[in-house]
Length: 178
Image (cartoon, rainbow, N blue to C red; front, side):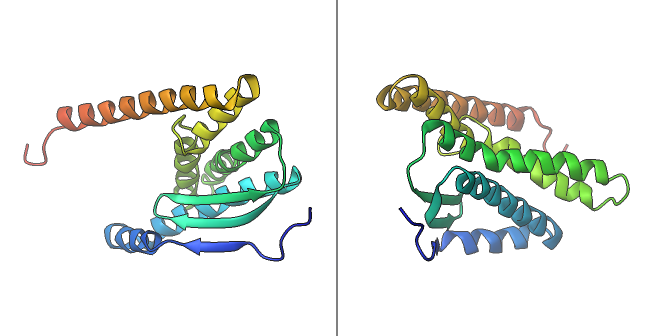
């Protein structure tokens, strides 16, 4: 199978709306750091995917991130590596940029954005990369039906724990009026 001439890219209306809200609530420097981290993340996925013989047929960018539709046949192991490529690039860049931040302080902002995006995407919650990696590892060892049920349960438990932790932090935090 030959790769298609062009990869189709679709941007949902929610993506620019989220960017507008982000610009309104934050600074252009933070937005730039986050967008650069997201670009590096997707390029990490793409580089591993191409090295394993796959390519991107379609990419959709939404308010919740990017989703690639892969063409070509990949093993569970190759898909797992491709899913890990994005967070791996983020975490490696975070470490390198943090080390270089001693000489030029603005690199700490870039390192932070890379680190947060890399760690967030490793959470075992579908459709994040960590959830996808969990599902692929389970498929590799069991079957897709059982993997769906197990990964779904882990996703629900992890999301519940994060929600409970957020509520606890909100409840125990002092109010701004105190």
